[in-house]
Amino acid sequence: MSDHGMSEDVTSLLRCPVTQQTLHFKEGEALAAFAANFPEGAYLTKDGQRAYPVEDGFLNLAPDSSTELKS
Image (cartoon, rainbow, N blue to C red; front, side, top):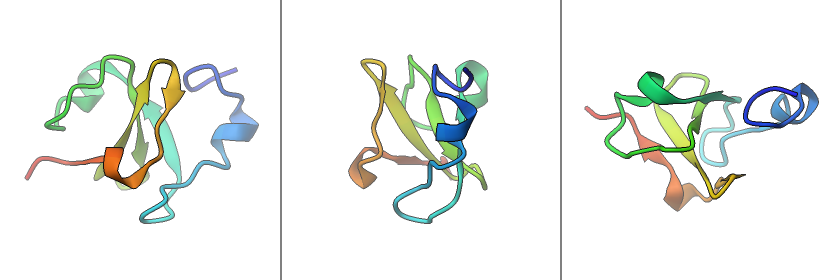
């Protein structure tokens, strides 16, 4: 298991519903550049410009739940 309790096989299939980029799990200081708070971590797009939160232990991939990098 890796990436917030998901197997590597599952995480390799995850894609951003907006950009179709791959996603990878980050937490803590790695998310400081985003305006939102991610207490449980988040999945970032490959380019690091968009984050999807983990809420109550579940990844929220709804486009409205994503946060873009602060400008």
